[in-house]
Length: 155
Image 1: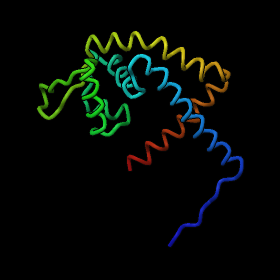
Image 2 (image 1 turned 90 degrees about the vertical axis):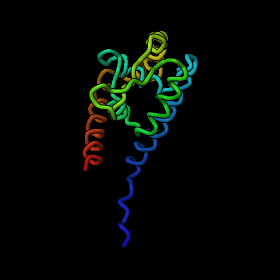
Image 3 (image 1 turned 45 degrees about the vertical axis):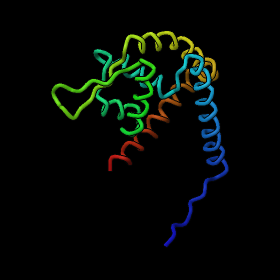
């Protein structure tokens, strides 16, 4: 038995399509800007989480949760980043099954060098295009959407 579609109204469709197109273009632009540093958005995000963590290290399972990457996909990304010398894996002493992702000095230097350009790109391509009220509205809207998504995926 098929479910009857609750089609989008013209204004709903316009909002949805604009969100999709803009989010893809913004992500693509930010990726291109980071490429000059040899980084992808995923690499940068991983390095940010590691740089913010105590001892610049996180359990791989925690890093997967934070980056919303499957453990397999994160493992492949970390393998690539190990090859670049940005991170290394270390076995967890207290849990033989656990593994830590640890940022290296080279990884730290890479993010320190890339961060000012990345922030300038975010500012130019996003922040400077919207008002303070827009920023607050966008944050509130996406907090609500993300919270509901989190509930849906925990069930």
